[in-house]
Amino acid sequence: MKHQNICGIINLNESINPTQPLTAHRPVAGLPFCGRYRLIDFPLSNLASAHVESIGIFMNNQYRSIYDHVRSGSDWDMDRTNGGLFFFSPEVYRTKPGMTNEDLTNYYNNLEFIEKSGADYVLVMGSRTLCNLDVRAILRHHLEQNAEITVVYKTVHRLAIDGRPMTCVVLGEDGKVRSIMPCSTCHDDQIAVNMEIYFMKCSLFAKLIRRFIAWNELYNLRDALHQAVTIVSTNGYEYTGYLKTIQSIKSYYDGNMDMLEESNLTALLGGNHRIQTKVKNEVPAFYGKNADVTDALIANGCVIKGKIVRSLLSRNVTVAKGAEVKGTILMEGCMIGEGAYLENVIMDKETRVAPGSQLIGSKEHPIVVEKKSKIHLGQ
Image (cartoon, rainbow, N blue to C red; front, side, top):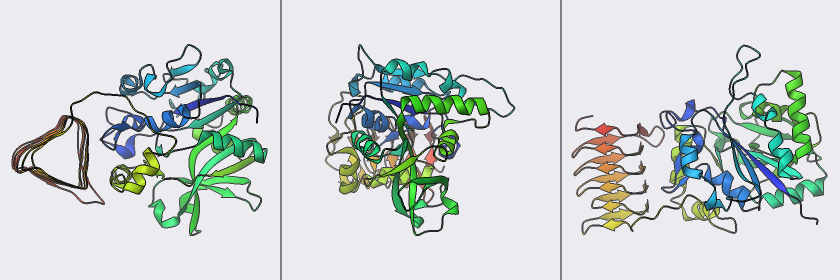
């Protein structure tokens, strides 16, 4: 098969309210994951492993943390003379009441990115979907099926949807996509969950953007692509690997806790398509003589003198003697004082917990502590 060039679009214009307060000062794409990664690492790595030479990242208003993390893209081998990473900041073009920064005008005004990339095809994805994707396999499927658009989906049991505002792909007997609809309206036991990943020719993507701009009916890329599958011939590509869509605090908590199972950790982060992230050189974690660690992922730079059970700790976390941490996510730079007790908590960066303090949440409703908070005894 002739080598086909692919460019990528990572759409970060995603609603942030369901993951507040973790996204009060960062986009969803900037959320830490598994003690080491950020959510942006997953779409970047999926595209980079397919030797995609040009990637356009369409930002939302909170983009400082993304710039700081990604920079030149060297950790993904994207610091190139030809191609590389292109950042597109949000632009406001309000031609109708109610239009937002998610409108298609930003894509329309930057179609030159696709034209100059020299690519034949474009893959469009967001940052909420955690998966380890073989983009070249999607290309092969797309060509074999002679489709105009290929939509990536995963078949899951209806109960696994868990009430989140996700959409499903409605497939005909011929394997063609008929429509995309809310999962809440689908009552089958097995549902083809839409991963919001779309593959098509660059020329078709540009044509669709221009068409929807002319219609002036649809305001964001997601809705436009949902409509597009009903206009042109669309096939589905079934993804069978690990998948977690970050739609809420609970799904974020569950996704992290999933990584404590070796099968999930290997499926998402290992294999032939490894997930890359920004390299930080830290000293190894230090474990005191009274440290007690069971079923946990602990990053470099941590100092552990207390008890850790089924938890994930990012870099430079300190857990003092006599402290106990269970079912908890501690982000970079947190300090847990002597005798403190944490259970089912998500603690943002650089938070301090005073000696003897207690925080106890539940698996269904973990407690979220904002960045740089100070927790005192009795809170």
